Length: 83
Image (cartoon, rainbow, N blue to C red):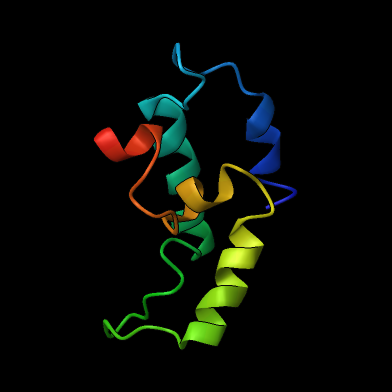
């Protein structure tokens, strides 16, 4: 989060509500896919982490306000929920 996602906090690709543009979201998510951390709470077989394990994932992705968006761990709320 700190090394890859946090620098995007200063990125100028924001809309008039200060939400990340689609371009920025896709760029961050592609990096998450390559790093193997896209939707980390859902396992390859379709099962899920335990609640405690999921809590750790949410804590880590929450180190940046863009982390949950980048790793697809955000609840469907906010600017990107309407897309």
